[in-house]
Image (tube, rainbow, N blue to C red; front, side, top):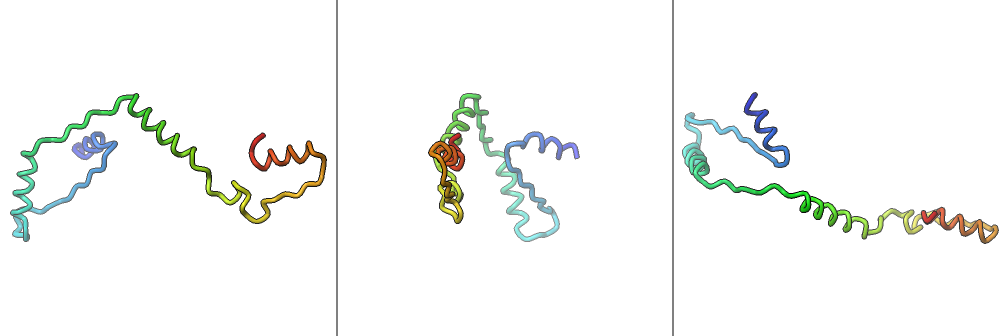
Amino acid sequence: MDIFNKLRTLCNSCVLHLQWILSHVNLKYNDIADSLAKEGTTMPQAYVEPLTYLELYSRRKACVNISWRHPPVHSWYRSEGPGASIHFKGYRKGQTALARLTSGHL
């Protein structure tokens, strides 16, 4: 269980898939899998430097900037749904207040 905990702490931000491959039981393609595993241990490891605060900030800012530029697609946002229009016969001041209330511009 100790190795499992170490793998869990190392891979907080990545996806890790483990596959148990039986060995020495005369399974088809077992020798090929063994040789590929040995070959994989000799390959250089890819090193990725951790992101700086400025890079993380820039990426998050770009996501936020993109998301707010697209208006919501809800039917009530542009009063396209049924019952969206409110008829109010009153003073101009009351009509203005109601229009601001329904549009969210208070």
